[in-house]
Length: 271
Length: 292
Image (cartoon, helix red, strand yellow):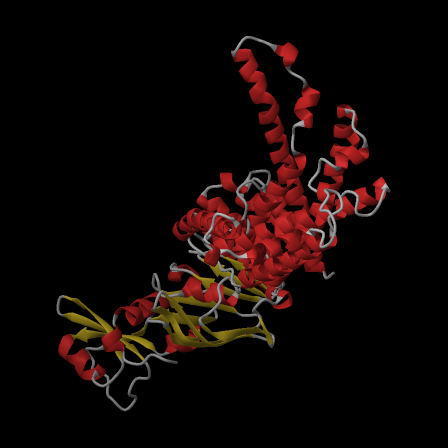
């Protein structure tokens, strides 16, 4: 890694971990503070409130995935700082990729610690039972009965997933950064609406209520392939093939990363 | 060893800002980049520093394209009007950050300058006034270890004392460690004695490109009675005129006709840089071709 790439990656890592940490603390304050205030306002009923159960309901993984998307979408402010300091667009992009990989790894470690080190014991669950409650539940038994092996695979799976969230954020953020604020607002409103419509349309194509000539099993089969649906035998939760979604996510990461590189190369200082 | 600006064209929303610009910026020289508001000075500096990409053309530093090139970009620093730093960051933190990116930042000199200008290094950038933001950016520009420093409106918001201090520091640091400075400003009189070479940007083109002494040597103020002055300047490149009562002053840019006798009633003086600039950029029809 050359010096500039090293410095830029270190800066991004430090700044993003710091900002993410601060945002997380704010969320915790809101998460715990609001019910507390509500209880004070509605009659001081503290006895039903459990901090442990509130901590168990945090949804740390989803929160981290959202953080990854949102923080990696922040593009222009870093671009301004880096171009002022003689950092090229490609170095900025590459350092962002490194930062995403490292932050996702740290985030997944913390999420795993939270799930299996805190949440599972306080709920009286075994590691395997906890694994069955996570986003990896469809694949939790694929590597056999060794729970640690499956746990490791789930961590790898989630790591790739968080990287994907970050790269998607990068692509969206850098695309928006190419436009002025007015166009950005329009895009932010229009793209999700179009996305929901497109998704709805695709789902309707697989619905049995859709007229036959419009039905398509291709999309359904594609989705099944992507999530590792067993080709033969019973489709039992835990026995889906994680290779398919992992490969799908890696391909998705490649596409979003490539798109973001195209957008990063076109970044420019706005008036 | 130079910056080569080759056939740069910049078009914004079908409006041509720069048209086929060719320039060479040499090492260890102080340049003035002059132009009226909207002439495209900042656009040109932004292209040189790869902050924006030109519609066509190429910028090279020491033979390397600046486009997406860390090594080339690391040889220049642009202090611009716009603030590209985080408002939350403290001045001292930004010094350190700049040092990380550029390396060999002169912290001692920065501390000395901050003290001389009265800049609080513990203040957050967002809390600084316009003048102190300029001072902060100037300190960075003078302390980074680069060969080419571009200063876009460097004294924006600075009072007369601070402007004077900046010019002194600029001369001092230049004599101690010669490097290229390109100063873009509207305060022409203040930098006239500082710059060695001048570019005048007007109507999307460079209309003057030369050593200040050479340019001023062929910029004349010819005054006297109107008929005598007009008779003398007939056929010369008259770029402007003024009238005061019966006295007429005509501004000529270019060689005079040595064979033409100078009437006793006519006086010839050299123009200063500001008057030359105003005349050149005011009177397009009268000025003809100023390319130098």
